[in-house]
Structure formats: C-alpha cells, structure tokens
Amino acid sequence: MSKIVWKPGTFINPVPAVLVTCGDMENSNILTVAWTGTINSDPAMCYISVRPNRHSYKMIKESGEFVINLTTKDLVKATDWCGCRTGAKFNKFKEMNLTKENANFVKCPLIKESPASIECKVKEIKELGSHHMFIAEVLSVDADEKYIDENGAFDISKCGLISYANGGYYSQGEKLGKFGFSVQKKKK
Ligand SMILES: Cc1cc2nc3c(=O)[nH]c(=O)nc-3n(C[C@H](O)[C@H](O)[C@H](O)COP(=O)(O)O)c2cc1C
Image (cartoon, rainbow, N blue to C red; front, side):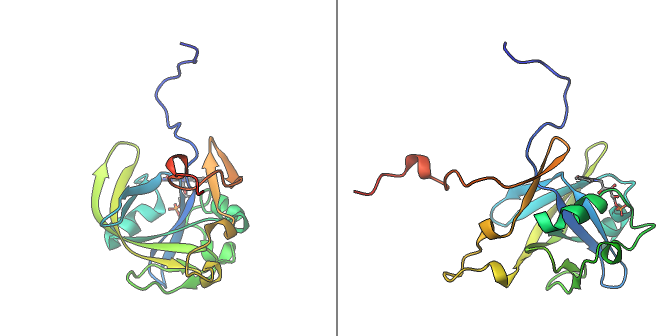
C-alpha cells in the first residue's frame, strides 16, 4: 500500500463548523460544533455530537431543542471564540456582538448574522463515548432574505460559508460542477 497507516481518528474532512444556539431568549448560549451533519432527507433530520461536560449539553438535553446557525467568513472569529469559551462564564452573544432573533418553532434564539438557521427538535440521544449524539428533526430552515435570488432560490455562493478541516477554517473555493453534471447529456 502506498499510504501511511494511522490509528483510528476523526479524519473526515472538510466538515462544517456551525454555531449551535440553545436555551431560550433570556437564558441562551452558543457553542461551536463540528460534529454535525444531515442524516435523513424526509423527514429532514440531522445530528450534533456534544461532550456531556459542555455548558450547553444540559441546556440542549433539558429543552430537547437547538438551532444550527451556518457560519461565514464574517462569523469566523465568533465561530472560533464560541468554541473556546464557555457560556458558564461568558455571555457569548454580547461578547461577539451577535444579535438574537426569535425562532418560529423553538424557544432558542437564532443568530441574525447567520445566513441560515436550522431549527431542530431532539428525537433521540445516543451516548457514543466521548460525545453524545443528539439526533433531531428539522422543524424549519430560516433563510436570510438577502440571499434569495430573483427565482426565489437561496444563492449559497453569496453567503461566504466556511468549512473546518484538520483544525483549520477555510472559505469556499470555486464551484466545480452541480449535482448530476457528470452524467448530464450535452445540449446540442
Ligand atoms: C471548530 C470547533 C469545533 C468544535 N466542535 C465541537 C463538537 O462537535 N462537539 C463538542 O462537544 N464541542 C465542540 N467544540 C468545543 C466547544 O464548542 C467548546 O468546548 C465550547 O466552549 C463549549 O461551550 P459551552 O461550555 O458554553 O457549551 C468545538 C470547538 C471548535 C473551536
């Protein structure tokens, strides 16, 4: 084999680094989560994996709700900071100058500065080891109007979304193709 073999590890790259909000409008918190993803299309379902010693863990477990706020270049400092400081000691909304907005279906606040916030209801908690996985149903996707184009579609290329890979934050590169392009017949 031409590859170096390492011990098992978390090496799926890139992943999102999202800002998860929890609690309610009065008593809220934000934590950064990289262990997140979509796990079902219909109903739309996703997960976040959280260490039980996080301040946010109890808030999410008790309320059964959280919001995934997508992150952008403008939010990269907040993304890192909210992942290095605890809500037990800091008001992260205040420290990072983020604006709380009411959600539609959950009590947790949305982050106004995020281009899309995904409201989630916990369905199951899997105690995997270091992290507990909150499996959740998506109740709604709240998109910032400024990214909706003239056809009513969300123009994701305009948001400046970031990803997280091997410990670093990255902006998005060029678009290489769209779903199905490899099998699409060429128009005559
Ligand atoms: C880029 C990044 C990704 C992170 N991903 C996770 C994660 O998936 N799960 C987790 O439990 N903590 C993760 N953390 C750590 C928490 O965000 C961090 O411990 C945070 O301070 C917890 O906040 P809290 O104590 O206010 O809940 C991540 C931190 C960073 C910077």
